[in-house]
Amino acid sequence: MEPLLVVVLSCLILLVGLALGFLAARLIDRIRLKSFHAQAEQILRAAREQADTYQKQAELAARDELHRLREAFNRESEQIRSEIREQERRLDKREDSLEEKSQTLLRKERSLDNLKSKLAERKADLERQSREVELLQQQQANLLLEITGYTREQAEAVLMERLERELTEVIAARLHRHEEMLRATSEERSRRILALAIQRHAAEHTAESTVSTVDIPSDDMKGRIIGREGRNIRTFEKCTGVDVIVDDTPGVVVVSGFDNIRREVARLALIRLIQDGRIHPSRIEEVVAETQREMDKHILEVGNQAVQEANIGPIHEKLVQLLGRLRFRTSYSQNVLQHSLEVAFLCGIMADELGLDGRLARRCGLLHDIGKAADHEMEGGHPRIGAELAARYGEKHPDVLHAISGHHDDVTIDHIYTVLVAAADAISAARPGARRETLEKYVKRLEELEALAVGFPGVEQAYAIQAGREIRVIANASKTSDSDAIKVCHDIARAIEERLHYPGEIKVTVVRETRAVEYAR
Image (cartoon, rainbow, N blue to C red; front, side, top):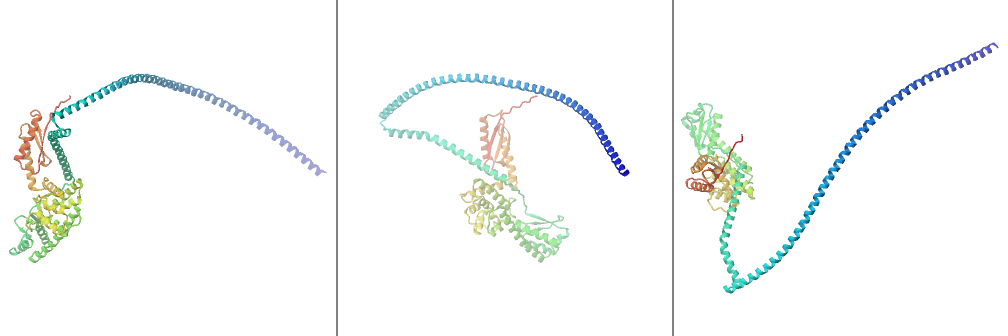
């Protein structure tokens, strides 16, 4: 029984221990719960206090915002009321204005009604007077027919004949004024076209001489060029057709000749001989022949380049070669090929402005001086020679042939392209600096023109402008009147015609003006 008692006692002790543990746990839980309740109440009190604080702050902020909104609403309401009052004032004013306009319109309507009635009465009077005038005119016409013994048709014929005689002079004067207007318009357009052509194409000109210089490395080379008893220089001059001048000038040998092609061949050949060092008759002949062949190729290349630059289409190879020869031909120190190219471009520009064929005009301009490449080989002037050569080598266009033969007025000009070529030729030749002799005459002519104009009474200054085509004269306004200025202008023009020689025409412009100058200090 003792083991069982021990077990029972153990169980009782265990149960008592569990009961005590459970009671201790419940007691601890109650204590903790009380502590938690105390903390919760403390937190709740703090939250309530903070909520009260937030609520008070929110109420204050809401009151401030409400006050601000109320003030803004009051201001806006006041502004709206002000605008409404202003609009009411404007409407009242507009209503008054409309009332005034309505009254004015009523007055005008009444005035118009009165005017209409008066016009109707006047119209009736005019119709009555018109019928009376027609009756009187009929009576007078019948009376005139009875007095003259003419029928109505005869009287009309006599009257028309008389009117025609009286109006003949008036019609002639009007026709003359119309012709003058057309002439002035055409001259102005032609000047504009020429000025545009000159402005768009301004070529450079250089003067070429009849001698060429060749540099030599030393004066000993002069003896080798001359050769034993002068055989080298004689052979060279015979092969090239030029004169070789070997003088005391150090380091230079001069090649002289009027044929530019021969002179250029001689210059190039002499340079080759000097560089080669082998100078004897057979070598001279060989080098000159080789240089001549190269020069022929170069001439052909220059001609082809000119044809391509002018864009005139294909032409015969012989004409191309003749154009290349013009590169070594000068007229009054002006290079003929450059002159021909310039004339071609000027003709093309003027033709385009006039609505003509610009390519055909350039062809006429480029070939117009082709005869100068062979004028020393054929008899006659270069226009006739050029036309014969162009026709011989396949140029069939009549305008081109006529431009070549007639650009110097050698034949009757009846082709428009000939006129363009003549004008472009004159422009290119008369350009200051284009020709040496023309430049000197040009400067002298301007000086004489200005001196002649200044010599007239009342003239203060005179300026030659437009390359001498116009003289601008400044007259003294205190010494000359408008009628005096017209007379001085006429006298200057007559004096220029009598005393000076010039191409074309010169425009004389007399300017008379009064200037008042004062300074504000």
